Image (cartoon, rainbow, N blue to C red; front, top):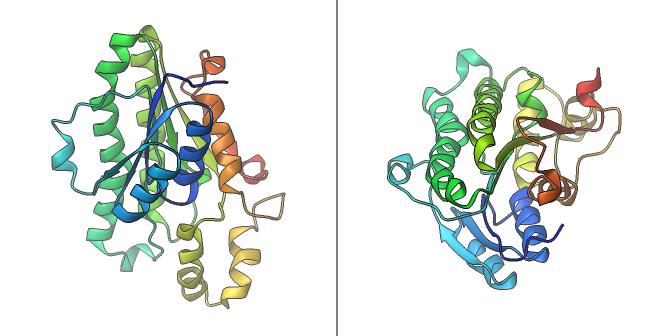
Length: 247
């Protein structure tokens, strides 16, 4: 599944799932652009994998409207999370999550598709979530955004098919990343339990396999979807959730 000669862009690429994806795609020969809000971390990783750093605030979507991207592979990974009952959910936080996790992927795909079409090759991989397929209480903004991303991915798949472009979602359960670790205290407050109980009683209660997903496991699936071997796979959503969605 060599990617020699291909270019890739990974958003939220300096840590967690994004970092694992950037490392794997680079190891397979792609020139990877690490796009992240954290300029220092993006530069550090880019230097390590012989890639390019792009310091970007994807919440500033106005800057993306006229963007043109020359990339063969686009991994929409950047995301944030807020945990709160709907009646207390901060309106601006809800809007931010839609902007970062739906509007920004739309604008990046819009910027990349003309180049992909010209080359008759493109791979768009959207890091969704099991929450793109299932809902959980207290995550109205995140669940809404991931469901929106699923729909966007399918439309891109239909439009891109005649041009050699595929679009798919990867749907992990809880992945052992800084984003998930930061949720534990919020979940403890909302559910009225200790932080030590959150992982067992909230995060893994629906999973048949009682452990979190490793970032490298998500990246391995992304790597396959980005390859030529997956040219007939499009408009799909691939769960990597330890059996969460099986029930």
